[in-house]
Image 1 (cartoon, one colour):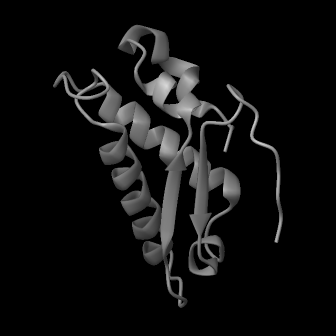
Image 2 (cartoon, rainbow, N blue to C red):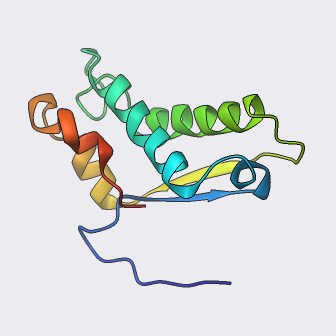
Length: 111
């Protein structure tokens, strides 16, 4: 078991996934998928909880679904499961207006 200190404002989320995911994907690939989903769904203009059309729960759920689908598409022969634990910094990031979250912001490598 590994432990680490979560620094306020430095970490966005924690991804816990089974070896069926990590047999077919690297940590960087999994993290990038989450940011890709954020980029896709934050650009929608349907105000809800985050002001971007999707609540943090929906974005985490869609990200988890994408992670599992990619692992299965890549032919994992093991079970696949994953959860995303959103930290306050992630929710703060998602609640910012769209124009401040464009471009390189979605390639953040904090996990």
